[in-house]
Length: 489
Image (cartoon, rainbow, N blue to C red):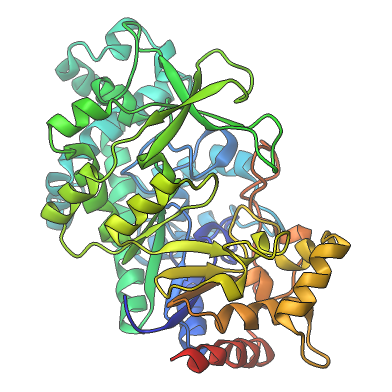
């Protein structure tokens, strides 16, 4: 990654769509056209994996599967799998995503489509064969979950929990597992067409990969020896981060901890497989919580908060050396936010991956590494804010007097210029090779457009972009602000 580019952050789920949530359909293609017209080189999305409790794409039942909510209904109609009049009954005009409604209705709609699908078609058989290494387990896991009223796998009967007599289980749930394979076929087929279209338009897709997997996932159920579990398959410790300026209790994520020694012995085969699949979806992968590879924070599994935990030495460069051997040329962004130690900086330097600079973190301290004038390296990605931050207009409203004074000194708003735009312009003029701006900042949206507030369990991942966003005024604004990249060429 050498030439200077800019991009926009917008989750797939936030795309306008008449079926309750964003999809890989017409509005996704329209957004690609919009990016191209605005001289953008990147579209950054959040993880495309399925969601479960809490609706977070960072707590998925699978690190490999795609979110079946993103399958476009109109494309299924076009393919003759759904009746248009029947599908029309599922159209809704909600201003926010209603995951409860989706959970109840979307599977019903997809199962209707499956009734007309030919499982003997060549492309489908080939897809199932090529993806068997993860798809077989995923399809069985989701079938068992349905049968068990979506309870966690740790509460299933011993035969299911401990995967005894898998052949018998596969025979019993053969019809159900075929449906789940069909859903993944549709997801990957539709998405591949969208990605191909974006790449032809000169747009690369930046995807997000959570460092951890959810405990209630097929990843843990199918390969428990990859994690530090007891004989009852309960986590010995769970992941989180300690208290900081943003959370006095820290963040208790609850993810199981990897058995890194075991993973290293088999040359990180699970990680390599995971990355291979991810590179079918993304051109560039942003690895979330990168500092966890240098050292990770563990908490007792029965803890109520993340206050009392300990840091454990991570796997270091070993994983990335193996990645270089098996997936040479992989494009990776390291999410190096949080407690950044000398060890983390050293690991980042050794890998050569670009890190992140979030300008919303910059103005409390004139010595901050995030302050634009202190960004000395071009090998980084500059953001105004990420999906975990307030929108910039909301953030500006909450700046202290000291922070606002420093902001005005650094960003030097032009006469009549919106303060949010001045921060975007300042981001564009940094030395960074890449600048990514959330679409909400270009639209000057406030708290209503926040995507996620860490340490909260409700109200997240619901924001939807208004379908009327694509105006000549907005395109001209983005082109004008992006032009400040040229001053650093």
